Length: 114
Length: 113
Image (cartoon, rainbow over all chains, first blue to last red; front, top):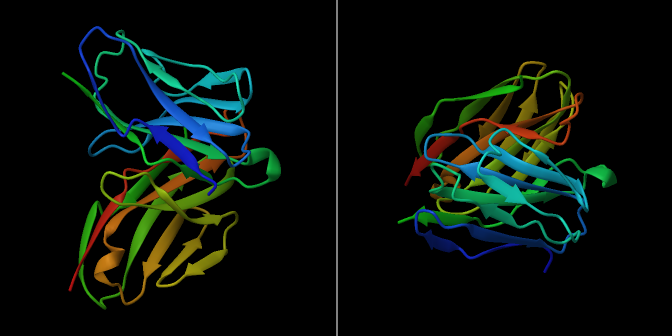
């Protein structure tokens, strides 16, 4: 089945630790995105990538880092510099170059700082 | 700056009671407007893309419409399984970040049997 796989589904992190969230897609999409969702707020863009080896900061990139070494993969690292990392993280991809604008989402990773 | 405002924040309906959700937007040239459905603890599920004013799309009990300033998601004779949060998003046609989606905060729909 084609889709977007995020892992793990739940993640617990101690304060001061870096943690990496995985996102893999087999839809052959060029564009990939990371969003953060907090209760009562809309999805906010952290980073996005249009092609391999290229990515841009979104609205709330501070304390996060990404890489795009392969078309299928777009991992997100939440660093210790992120002051309030507890949230629901969503990865998405879209076929922008193919003329399809809509983004398709994974099932999310819920990160909790303990 | 692109903005999306959804109303109401929450809506409670009886099964079979039709209604509409609103999405007002401000964007520097609309490339596309999107509707998603999100169930608790899950990622958003794509419903519709609308590209230009006057366009309409339907899927089962849902119908999305678009004007130059807002979009409506009409729900006809809803069932309890339609209960979810409905998200609206826009993508601008201009600017360096033209792949970015800007989301509203969503409308939480509850349909009681």
